[in-house]
Image 1: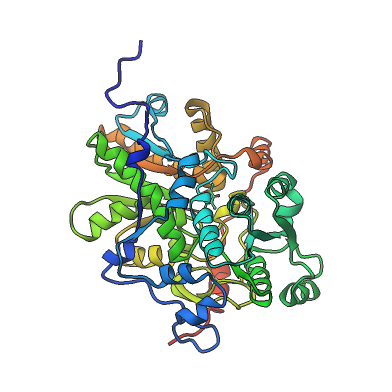
Image 2 (image 1 turned 90 degrees about the horizontal axis):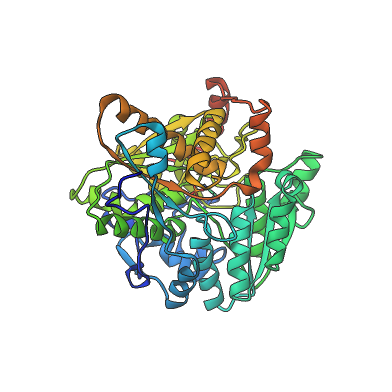
Length: 458
Ligand SMILES: *Cc1c(COP(=O)(O)O)cnc(C)c1O
């Protein structure tokens, strides 16, 4: 008989304990993230310039480096209550299986139709678009989680939603596309013939299956050309990390209920939004000198922005229409090798996390794809959730840290972000089972070639 546990398997918050404000970690950063630059003039983007592409209130949030707390509008709080609070789960079963003295917790964000944390920001962005009286929004999606989340949010607020979906995913993930259409979104494979940049890319690379950078360029062009439309982005930007702070605030509130202090906080990092959100309040304490935590970003070895990229200004998209961002980047032309964690294939990293990493406030590790899927299955077999490949990067490192504790006998407390479920990723699991998954890691020469093409900004 398992002995009675003092800490429940799942720590839930009451509705009344859910966050009413987002936390803006930039307010506590001594070195602020570098400003976005105009791609033509290389001067910091003004609110007015950004307003041509993004919604007004989101521009204000993007540029706000000072206010630590920003009210979550009532309508968004209500929507959050429909699928939140997300449980903080004590992974007792995994601990037992590993035979580790470590205490492992994970924050599970997969409890909504989009299957990921992305809805936390999608609903906020749709709300502000509606408030501004816009007709609709445009965006890109790679693996499809962001497009799905945004479709859900737009249908809730009766906004038109145009999604440019990387062609290879459009063809390989028809079910994702169909979920978006359930919510009334129009989904176009990218590169398309709807935009100048799409036509250009199709002409230069006939038969191309597209890339995230290219889909971004198309979505931006579509928004800028059509009155009443703005572009929205699911990661990387400061505003997205702000909205995602709801993950960390809930996690901290749940831990505080039982006086639990984590030693290590782990998250996967694509553009950095879930990790930025999860760590926000903990990083705030660290920045203010109130507490210390080891914070670890986990990225794929095939797309190693933090661990092998350069900290430099770079284009956010292939078409070079977006503002330049200073971030850890592999170069905007970099296309990672076949990797099944679609959400982690972006060439750059959030400017906020990039600055924190450069300042030595967090660590980063890269992991091989097959090791990730091994961890995913180990987890699935004992914890009752089929994890997304992206999330499984965090699982891999959480297990590795727990196994180190087994060797040393240390009872460390580990918290990781379980960003979503993997039901739309069964092709990836199939490849893994059939031994057809490769672990390609780019060479130094390859990376240097892309790095040499970074824009020169002084
Ligand atoms: C998009 C996505 C990620 C990566 O995005 P971040 O902005 O780095 O958080 C991770 N996990 C899942 C399930 C995703 O859909």
